[in-house]
Amino acid sequence: MLILAVDSATQVAGVALAGRDRVVCEEFVNFKRNHSEILLPKIDRVMKDSQCDWSQIAALAVTTGPGSFTGLRIGMATVKGLSLATGLPIAAISTLDVLAHNVVRSPALVAAMLDARREEVYFSCYDVQDRFPRMLLPMKACPPQQAGREILDLIGATGREQVILLGDGATSYHDYFTDILGQYLIPVSPHVMLPRAAALASLAWEALDKGQLDNSLTVKPIYLRLSEAEYRLQKGVS
Image (cartoon, rainbow, N blue to C red; front, top):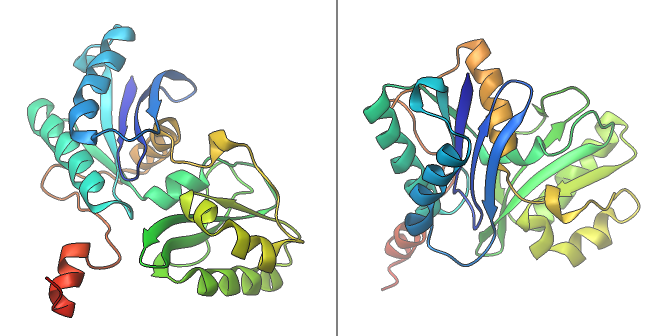
């Protein structure tokens, strides 16, 4: 059996088919394309290239956020529609959890962060010494300065000697984090810096085994803060 994983929570669009112990097929694009135009064709290609039919799918998986409001809604709507059509359950996984799962079996502290715009990041820290990441701080939207301070505090509290920053939030505020965390930072390769659908599928298998599944009626996005339109309305900006 396989899990079909769909991620469009950020500028990345990714689709993967994965079993418990192998990735069968993955498509990943990090380019300025409209997710609503490319996501369903990607799903179709992955299914056809893998010669997979829906009877072989045990569950669907989707990133629930935080991330781009538009991207989240596109991914969520796509997976909900597939769930309604097939009756398959949904594993709903945080985007930050997916990011953190790009690193495994490491003694370093992992900070997953996405650029939230308006001089903020979506942020959390993880212990990744086991196969799956364990969240150490609640997810939040905060200024990068606050994220840096909390990472330093956690380094002191846990006695870690190194930290890995993942996500486009780390890239957007690279100079700041280098200044405040320079002696602790471990540089990593670009292929682990962004959410991957294959990592989403891996976490979905864990959710499936634990019975932590949703359906098209119960799955919900994680926003952490107001959308840009809601923010502007609240501030009285037209």
